[in-house]
Image 1: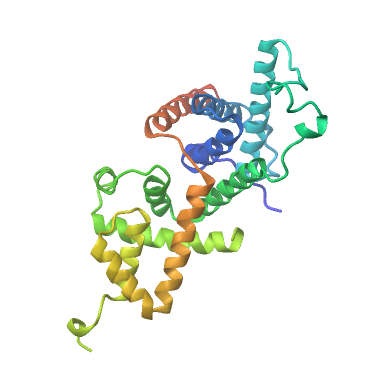
Image 2: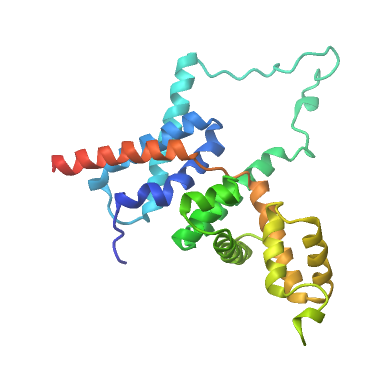
Length: 184
Length: 89
């Protein structure tokens, strides 16, 4: 198996959004996610010599990020001094919830599962986005995910509107066939 | 057949309108023309389906990414660290 190499110069462009999205679905706060991603990149830079070349670059970065997220939760828990579980947390009314059976999760409430699926879908989207040519990925990201106006993108990247729509069209075609294979 | 006498629009235009409507940027008349085109063009129907599926998937997944300022900031910080690192070697 060929050894994987690290190329830190391209890390931010290639992985920053992926890592950010991964973090935000786990910590739910933009500021904290931002800090964690930055910590991850800096820590990765420091421990580059420990990289054995067995894993893919992104997998390696994610494994560092996971540690950082765990550390973050550990820290906030020790700040509070305790992590306690209270079984009588929703005892606002007199009659409801007296029986333990009434407190179990509602089987028809699928929100947790939905969130999980959405996280996976987000990862699938970023995987597909990484396969696009750089320019297409950039335009698609700005237009679709960040939701920037057409005019602003054109000004910033110095392209015409029709040029932009051609890029968008190609990106959308590639994205839907990629997601068709991996998701739908 | 002369282009003038064709009812509606070409596939190329139809796809363009379809792309635009994914971002709610198409006009009412463009949408009417697109829908007329879709009545008789299977290929464009497929494209439109795939396209709206993609839009729905992206809005469902609630993907997000860094805003421009924080990305620049991150880049600067990282490049600084990168320089320090290469100097120290």
